[in-house]
Image 1: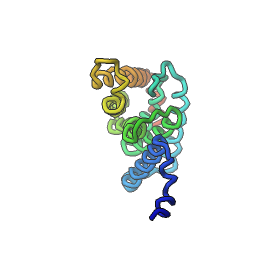
Image 2: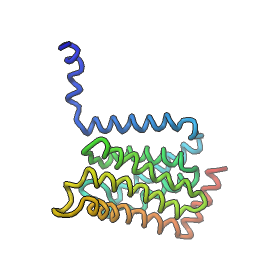
Image 3: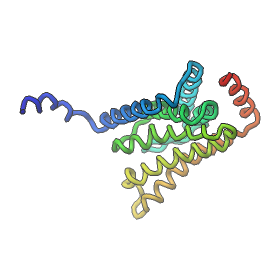
Image 4: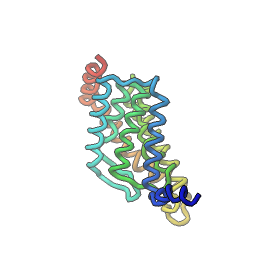
Length: 212
């Protein structure tokens, strides 16, 4: 019995953050398995999905403001993901958003619990794909997808970041304010850019090629 325990003894050396990442990857793989029949990527979708992730990732490095516990305000870094969901629908949009969320975990990790990791990374960014339910109105899709990300971060803030709230402040109020400002400004930037006529025309022209 002691030998069997010794065989698995190195598992105790795994850091909580590393374990959280492993769980998040397994969770993402599980979702991919569940959606394997309902979401089918062709070559063109993979190319556009990769481009959306790449552009968003580059834009995420341009930060107007960065919150110490993670999160930042960028120049519409979420917009390419919204556009991809607008082109191909919610299913592919959610999966691409989750993939981007895992990159965000690598770029700007702040992990206190494995559930918090799921809420702040794959689930929060996967929620951006909800914009795909509004394939005739990108701007409205931006607002819905943005709210989905906000809500996921909000839950994370209430349950896992209450200790960062100023003394005497309700954790719900704290999470609402912090995520409302960070995600709210991010979504507002994406929304404003999405209604610029030149940007909207470019998106529609590319959409015709993407769906051709």
